[in-house]
Image (cartoon, rainbow, N blue to C red; front, side, top):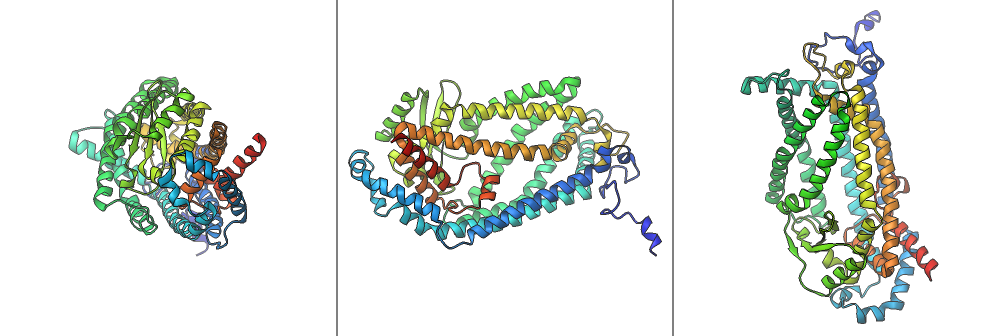
Length: 499
């Protein structure tokens, strides 16, 4: 009996691994002809599991941080100093900034308000991290299961069969059209598997903690709109991308790079002007002292502000935000209506000073440039291996009678060879983003908004139940913005230098 074990293909012991479903039913052996084919599937599964285990260890640390009941001493010390400074300047500010309606809410100090919200913040964070751990466990299980079962070759073959039976399309002549069917099937499967998690997050966790304002009708209307937009924009985008790759020859990555640049600019232009208004209402900010002050700030920085909007963010959530968009001399600023309810006018100016700092310091252009370099590098390396039969065969695309589908090559490249690079680059960009946030805070401080930005950040944090005691490892890996206490401490240190 022991000798018979040699005849059993135990996936966990024998290489090369092969998916349960392959196009040839497992008769092809080409995956053994190269190191790439030999290790691709097992290596991808191993990397996926290793990343999952690492991120779960960080989640466990963050969960422990959310279970603490004592208010963080460093945050307490920092905010106490801010309150002391605000008390010194309080009488002057109250008499000059025109924020009486907001000042009425400030009978308590920031520290008292944060302490009152601390328990709720911990509870909200704990619910989110517990749910996130379950969701990521399912995502990892689904990813590994799809790889081992051969979901991609199965769905591709179904797309080929559907294209042939319904439209008379063949893979050799109509690969791009069949790729669109494949994209549709992938989108449907992804929507179905993710929908329960989205519903629970929105209507259980967010509702429990007082943030969700959506109805089920609005939720599903948004989902349908998103699917339609995916078809209208994603379909032509994929078709053009595949056409360029096929027609571009050995140097197709250069043409793809140019295409991605044009598409990025197109999306940056059309999203805020055409797409976002499909989901939210944008109304001009009414005439007020705040509006005059914002335009005055823009003029001071030579920011070509043309329009100033208020967005009905409260339609879906009580979370708050503000953002800017536009090219050249046609810039626009959007304030969430929730933000205007949560902070004073002077604090809004401080927050916009921070956002304008990103523009003035070149962070926006830098991020755009980095994104374009990323696309160029990714497609260059993709060009070096996308014709490799061994890579396709390792994941079940082992039919020698048909050329490997280009769309599958893209998916496999980003899921396998590029995945480790993407993780490293993502972490580097996270660190860079935190650096930019400190820089934008400093910019707002130099505009004279230090106290207002500090208090504004505290208010936004407590209103949004942000993490007040994040684990340092978890925040370093995940947070694109520094933790609140780090930002406040940095601003206070800069204040000392300027005084």
